[in-house]
Length: 288
Ligand code: AMP
Image (cartoon, rainbow, N blue to C red):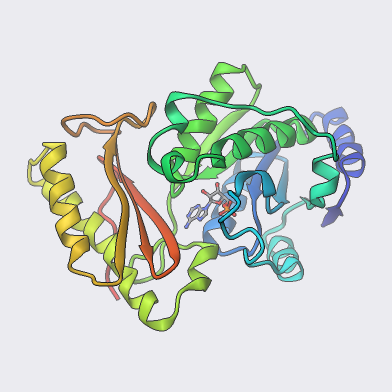
């Protein structure tokens, strides 16, 4: 596996692959990998000749009071996991390689990025759009693989690719969960044992909402009130948002239709967890 730390080195390999007309899949990550990330690599390996993973904790998408400094990192472990998956190249630049001192260009978005996580994390999607624009311009992927766990990020990136005519197909990959239903996340390592148990309330509540929808309930306001009351049963859970939105625009809708997204962000202690389901998707497995 090639480990490219500089843009120049990554591009050298990309040009060789392009000259041979190989298709390239890109899986952007912030590292501290888990099976959720690896499912993106596996999907890319199925679809493309070459799979590139990026490992970059992007400072631009963290607000001043967020967890940039303590975000978990273990690059050697990440490399072992990526190599075992058969990834061809990992691109892992330093922040100074990606952002020169006088960097002053940003990719910004309205509408899709404004609600949900954009409300409590106002700089995040500008950081995500800017770094992904750079990664697309460095790796020239045919396809880019992103998790449905970060449903707003996926919608934002799909919209950016459409609006700015990026020549890349965005592939959304299903959320990979722990046995008890908790969506896998690098941030789960912040949870104490008691918080880890309390965090089950997210997937349990989403699953209960899925069952209500399957039984014919569609009124968004009623479903949100139901989910809020379920979450309130867990004393450690502090709700950031519970919303039901259109899958493409991330705007609230009055009645759930297939493809709409039921999404939540909940603080368990100091750790902010997000989770969601898309109406019409299979029931979340919360056994265990
Ligand atoms: P991150 O390292 O958290 O920025 O995530 C990198 C990519 O992996 C994003 O596209 C995420 O949506 C995706 N991802 C993270 N966790 C999961 C999961 N549990 N299941 C599927 N994809 C995930």
